Length: 401
Image 1: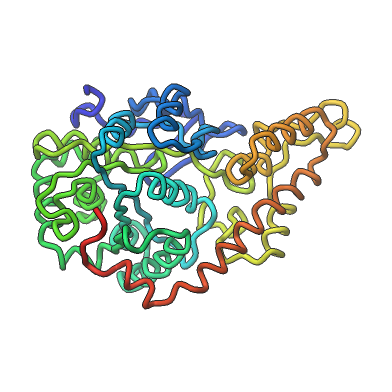
Image 2: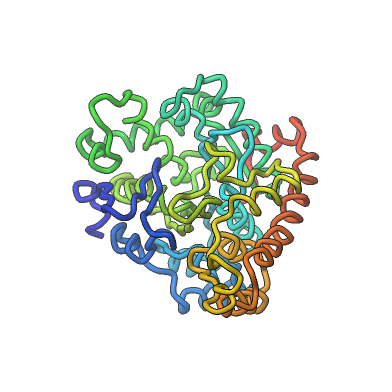
């Protein structure tokens, strides 16, 4: 496709919305215009017809993230569904750039959905921790980046992935142990010029050379030949669940795939969980007051939502009763769209808040009561993830294919 040709690929952020692998922001209080992003990135919208096919092929009700447009965009998802329908295998690949000791609930969205995909399709999963990326982009020592990767790996394992079907690795430890990984990196690097990678990722003359080569490191796991100890000599297609800001890496991967005589990776893109202070920014680990972390206590969660969650309510109770609240900008309601399972209950809350019947304090209370048990249950699982458990996922081995 023309939009995937390297010479035509670049990060073009308009004056309202900024979305690239390192920055996400918008001037709009209601958040990013995701339809505009689809046009800009050249992907396809996940429509009801595709969701219906998903349910027909899997025999499962679509995840709430699909039903509510949280995973909203794709590249070749229909091909993956057709593969599954024909009884053929694919694998999942996703990842995380570790930038803090503990992940926040926004980081969980792709992993929660990926776990559901793994359960529904019963396919292998590969998770990459790009500690090398964080060491190059931030003022972080290599040793510190490795430590955060191992801590985040435990966070990810606690989501509930199948150890018999999941391989996790961090770049700084693994790449040197896998010649096929480095060989595919070199093959990818040979396909992309310096001018092209500058155009795709916006690199400048003052950027360290490690940044220039890093895209090939994130691209390589999208090809099954990178992992011969898992797939042998089989060429297996890949589906990448990720946030939309990671798409440039895989547009590049899809372009070079033809020259490598390998299948283009398919993608399914998520929206961003907004920061507590408003939908102009995604939740970020760098601001503890803008994020709910996975190791926060119930008291911290309650205080953060009550104190910082941006409200779509009116200035006074009287005005709110008259005009109602704005769910397009209200952060507590936005969080419920991510974490409240019941569609009917969500619709009733929306109706009640927009009519003015429900006040902001009541809406925040529902958000607190919805999110807190999810995190508490997660923390119980996280406490059981020992170093030995982590090493089972990191072990270089053949997993179920």
